[in-house]
Length: 94
Image 1 (cartoon, rainbow, N blue to C red):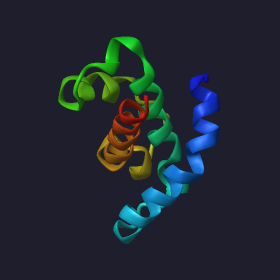
Image 2 (cartoon, one colour; image 1 turned 60 degrees about the vertical axis):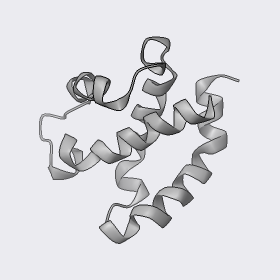
Image 3 (tube, one colour; image 1 turned 135 degrees about the vertical axis):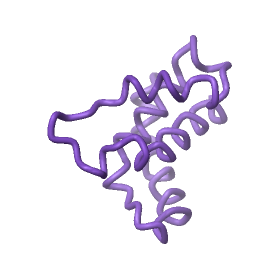
Image 4 (tube, rainbow, N blue to C red; image 1 turned 90 degrees about the vertical axis):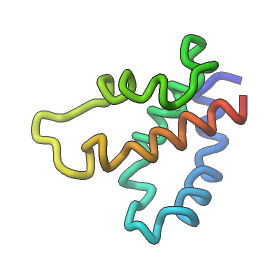
């Protein structure tokens, strides 16, 4: 199954898990969905799949989209956990 097909199938589950774990932090799924998906896709890349988060975090941070008028909600410090969760989920479910 292609990565995008897996994403569409599993996104409702990821959303539910995210909301039960992080909603008390004030981090709603709609705010972090793209960051989680970014990590999910990275976790499926062959060159990253066998690496640990600490080894690839800086690389992912440098590739994270930063709009010219970025706000706090798109900063790496805010979305880092969502990217990590997506990355780890991709590796576990592969």
